[in-house]
Length: 384
Image (cartoon, rainbow, N blue to C red):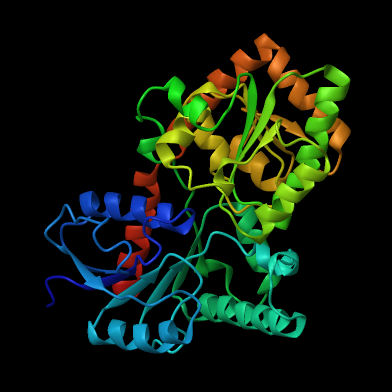
């Protein structure tokens, strides 16, 4: 009888936002939870030195293949097959489609199914549509081929069920995400962080990408109304990476003559996590107007340091946050304005939300996510 199994983990996103943070926290907790199985962790040149295994049964393998490329589908495929894995875990949708053995996946959402990213592409229209077809096929194939698919909310599971009605519901496993301890235990605020980005208090904070479904143009409109209707003297700070989407938002800010009031530090250089933590600690409120999310982690990270949140009233948010935040209609800028004003001026409400936000932290932990993930591995390996 085999003493242990060999499990491979695609960690090529390690160190990046989103899926990178997910895989970092899963690895850190699996190292503590599983001393029996052997793990092969696939990394790129960029993140190979970032990950230092803390358990003897975790081994690094260089797999320098870019995501969403033919080299990934061929070179990476052979690299994985060579390791003779009992199970290959991909915490994303882009599996090597020809991989013949046991697979498990973690897919946070299928937002791209319903929200186009055409505005943010420089590709010719026909080629963009072709790429989107390929994306839809790869997601479907990942769901079809995986023995189990780990999904971070009931709302997201419902989206999968609608998109793939012939897939058995038993394939989907609910595993909520957690807050990275780095976001709770970081250094104290340095006034130099505010000076570094030319930020003055009071300010509102938003941390995420600027994709279409993130609804940032309406947030800017609500901020304009906040200044006009309620004489808000402060700034709106948008933290996100530089890409075609954020460039469009930057142009909108310029057109609205709000360049000194709506700040986008990420357009000049990458904003490190410790700076984001400092900004969370000093912001007046966290605002998040997204139209669709799979889990929506950034408000939880804000709550971890006592920052009250005003966020969009969508099914995922209701599921995750309950009554610990102030909701607004993400399609109605007047309602957004009114609720943001309420959260920055009503001290009783602020204190209540800060308290409830801190209480919520115990409900979501990466250790629990990793436990469910390990259970999934064991079920697949034991043929349950």
